Every structure is written in C-alpha cells, then in structure tokens.
Image 1: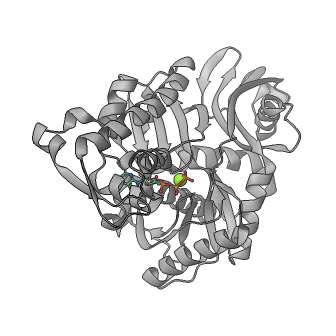
Image 2: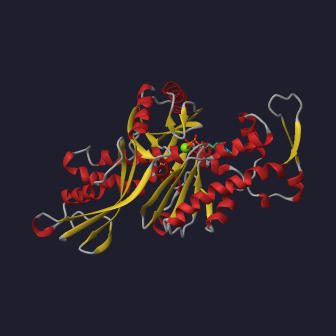
Image 3: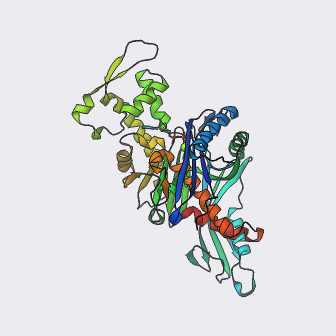
Length: 413
Ligand SMILES: Nc1ncnc2c1ncn2[C@@H]1O[C@H](COP(=O)(O)OP(=O)(O)OP(=O)(O)O)[C@@H](O)[C@H]1O
Ligand SMILES: [Mg+2]
C-alpha cells in the first residue's frame, strides 16, 4: 500500500542555484514529484558557504516556492554534500570471524568496515561517507551481502570519502537557520547517479560527471559500486568568464550569450550558422557590437575541451573501466556540443543524465533537465530510506550495521 504520509525533500544547494524538489510515493516504487522550487544562489564559492545569511535567504526562497507548488509545509530535507576538497580513497580491512560456527554477524561486518576505514586524516578533516565495494570471505571475492554466510576471514573493500569538516558544518548551520532539519547529507555526484544511472551502468562501468557552475564532480562506477571520486574546482562559470573577458561584456551578459548562442563543438554548426551574426553590448558602451557565432564558439570550445581533458585524465589514470560510457549532469552539461566533445575526449559513448521516467512521475516535465539530477536523486534517496524505515518499524540500535548496509544498497537500487 502506498503511504501518502511520507514526503521526501531533496535540497540541492549549488553555487549558482538552490533547488528544492518534493516527492511522495507512487505505484511501483516510483516517486511522484509534487513540488519544485528554484532560487538564485548567493553566498557560496565552489560549493562552500562564504556568507551564511545569503545562503539562508536563497534556501528559504527555493523551499517556499516548492512548498507553495505542493501545498505542503516541510520540516526536513536531504541535502547535497559538495566542495572542491572532497577526496575518495579505496581501503580494505581484514578481521577474523568471531562467532560460533563462523557465521558472519553484523558485528563482524562492522569490525571489517571499521578496520578498512581506520585512517589518518589531516587535522580538521572527517570521513563523510563509506561506500562498500565488496566483501571477500576466505578468498572468495565479489560478495555483496556477507551477513549469515560462513567463513573464517572477512575482508571488506570500502570507498571512503573525506573532506574538511568546516564545509559541512557551515552548510548545516545555514540550513538550520533557514528553519529546516537535515535528514541526511549525500555526496552530490552520488545523488545525481541516483536519478540518471541504470543498474547496468553501475555494473559495467560508467563515469558520472556533474558539471556545476564552479565545481565539477566525477564518480566512477563499476562492479555495482563506486570505484573512484574526484572533484575539480571548475565548471560552467569558466566558460562564462572566458566570454566576458574575450568579448568585454559583463558576467550577466556573458551568461545570456552563452545560454542563447553558445556552442562548444564547431563541427555541429553549418557554414551559414557559423557566419550568422549576434549582437552584444560591451561594458561601458551604449552602442552594440556584432560578431559571428563562429567567434563565440572559438572562445568556448578550447576551454570545454580543456576541462573535459582534465576529467578524462583522472578517469584513465585510475584505470576506470567505463564500458557504459559517460553520463553528464549539472547545468554546465547543457552547453550545446558538450556531449559530442566529451564523446571525443573520453572516446566513449556519452549522454546527458536526466531524471529517469522509471523512477519519477508527477511534475517530471518541469524538471527534465540535467540541472535537476542532484535534487531529484536526493529526494529519491530520502523516499527509499523512509519507506524502508516504515516497513521495518523504525530504527533499532542493534541493527546499525545491517541498516547502514541496507541504506547503501538502497542508494544503488
Ligand atoms: N542552457 C545552458 N547552456 C549552457 N550553460 C548553461 C545552461 N543552463 C545553465 N548553464 C550553466 O550551468 C551552470 C550551473 O549549473 P548548476 O545549476 O548545475 O550549478 P550549481 O549546482 O548551482 O553549482 P555547483 O554545483 O558548482 O555548486 C552555470 O555555469 C550555467 O551558466
Ligand atoms: Mg551543483
């Protein structure tokens, strides 16, 4: 039966936009989108809070709009975790199975995970997520759910993501000041993957690249789990700044030009289009200037290629197997030609990542853009956690590990 009392809220606090998406359960495990709100974001740099008051105001605006659309009042949200300093590492830990009959218990798994993630962190850093890759029992690898199996030696392989604590604390403070509780925080690319990747993508290997305004995050999936995470301090704003600089226009004007006429792949334009003229107003001038679309593309293309090459280098130097290709999300992916250029740079099939119809319904048409992948994924993760908690009758401390593990599996379904 569908529990109409459950509401899930995804809150994506980005450097350029704050987005809020409210969903409720629907048939077949889908989520109906019932509220959406968006506001210009102020007070962040590269995903990190610089002015709390401004962030509070943007969050309130986005949330109020989503509340108005849905007719609901929300108290709690699942929020994105971002920042250029996030770092992912693969770790492993081994323990001897303690119990009678050598049946692996919650506690054994807990110890194996603890032993894998016991690591020295720089001062002021913390572990923000631990994503299991696999368990190995007496040399047998590829085990996903070890509890109840028999064995003497249990090894866990975990992808551990860490970051400076201050970034997270400041976001938490801003959200509380906006009057909301935090249900959970989720890595931005992991949330985008929830919306846009299929089980096959995760199994056969794929690179999810979320291109924001100032931050681009990469997560490589393979064998059903996260294999690598990296964050780069660049995004769509770099293209805007190049346009502003090259054409001597203001940042808002450059943003308009980029969104209306921008293209990062010259080979997509016909000769006629190349020569077609656009009008711009240089800073401090009254009269307009004319330029061809070709010149605009000549400014944008090299930068887009450069940014994608950085990301591709990271993928290949980590021996990322990406048979399922590359999935681009985030507003920065919307520049015309980005998919085609990425396809060449990565030498792999590339597509834009959207909120998949098999997971989402309701107001889906309003958010059918890669910009909404993160907010949608956050809400979907929250919905699944809540449904699980309802069906198991709430949390019990003894089931900590099992639950943590379930949450993890849930992230991937
Ligand atoms: N139609 C479009 N064409 C080209 N670029 C676009 C388009 N729409 C949005 N963008 C760009 O996408 C970027 C914003 O993407 P997004 O909203 O995903 O970022 P964010 O989440 O606010 O920031 P971040 O993730 O970096 O903190 C901006 O640089 C914007 O100019
Ligand atoms: Mg973002």
